[in-house]
Image (spheres, each protein chain N blue to C red):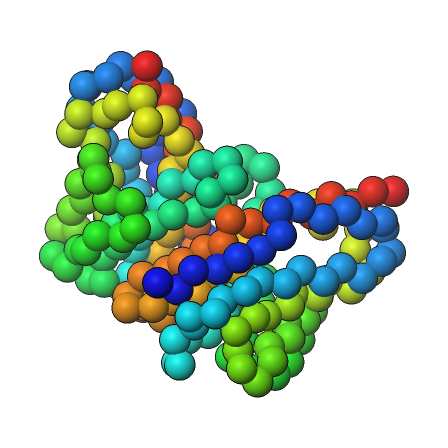
Length: 108
Length: 113
């Protein structure tokens, strides 16, 4: 099974960089790692996706080492509005697998 | 506006009373799926559909049914709900399986007493 493991929660302060790591030891060879953000009372929404090395977009960076058994979501200079739950997602045999989510709490 | 809609948003029912949660997408997506979200367990896939008339079990299919008669609709059916099906349910769609971004509905909070 393409299980994923994440820390349950993290605390940070405004302006800091936050790194959330997801472990996915059984990731399929052709699978991409995708991260989602979820606010209370909303469905998850896409943040970033990558296959290997580093990917950057306007909101985050994603680091994936050569063995692809883990990935790290990096949020630069977080603000209070980044307080949310963050999920990593993998895919295997037509099914999607989400981690249990990391609750990020950004403090002023 | 591209979106996934679910109805109802909130539902309180009693054990054994059949119910259906509807899901519809307007993006012509092939892949649709249902998830349940429970504290500490994250999102778990219940059923998925790779196209019309093609459905298959996810990780937690027991007690649920689905159908995909039209591309845009993917209803979730609980024939005989039980209290352990009390949860937050999300429908999602994507262009296809694999690497494609999933678009989620707003969620349906179900309580079974």
